[in-house]
Image (cartoon, rainbow, N blue to C red; front, side, top):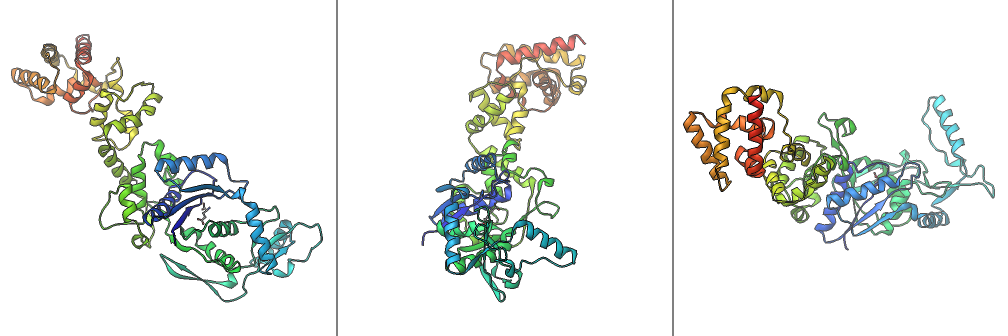
Length: 465
Ligand code: GLU
């Protein structure tokens, strides 16, 4: 049997990282088995589903590199299919029409509450108000006793008491299926063989099992993965910071890092931390998915992101930076200068945004000196040193790092100064601050004319103090 998995987001918001992990697991599971990965949009909740969410989810999936083989199917376009199956259940007597209106149910719920009891739907109300033109919902006739057993790939046999489950609606009065019914009909008609999803769906599983049973369909192999927790041990939520894939993208994370990070939340392969997508496809099985809840660790995601920033070709990173630079008003192409900057800045950056935020001085013709740096390093006694350096650099025919170093060494020897004493004022002159890549690399990137221009400006600035 060909393996078929699916990812079935409800488009009521952005793609949460828990959802993204589910998508990744399903995609990898299908790829590992040479099967297919189906994308289905569960948009039957018409009040909460939006086209904006659908677009954002699809965009996030594409960005993560989670290509689907079929879909996106939309439940709202499959209403006939659900109705057809619900009718089948009516005919076989496994479901019945229920004429109780939502208002009546609400009243009964209120009554029960006032009596201090728990509301339970009572089958005997079902046909009460029957009349030829009355609208009706369709409810599944559920067993009154016994246990419902589901075989979960990660949890083994999970049992549920039938008494816990009342006859539930499968098709609502407005013709829309309920969530559980749509999921089952879709998984069955799309021939899904394996369902991997968050364990928040475990409570739905017995209802779904009953629908499969009533339709004499085989349930796919279920696997309920433990939730992701925040660093405080509580279920990951907005309180913990960025929680959507779009947020991480906007913060300058790379898709490789996000995928690598999320897959490791619950899945492991020995001590290995870094996996390419190909490697994940080769190695991913449910055997290595843990049972306990994984804890979200932002530092580890940062660490992985730094790794990918350094290991991806700098030309690629430069390309990813272009839109960020445009936003800042820096209009560059992927040229030699930007590639050199990337090569230097990726050594310490955690995100693309870190890089974009620390390269302004390479692209300005007006350096502003940080006050603290200005006061500390631009003292009168540094003037002759800066003048020597400027003169030495001016005379260089070949503005290579090697030749620049020679100029510095000569001045250091003549003035009996250590490199730090010279490099810091030069850095302030060239960048305006005290933090930058190596001073020779900065000069190499700026080029001779710009370096001399900035040094001369610093000299005038200090002289005018
Ligand atoms: N639509 C559901 C959700 O977004 C998923 C349903 C399922 O995986 O069975 O949570």
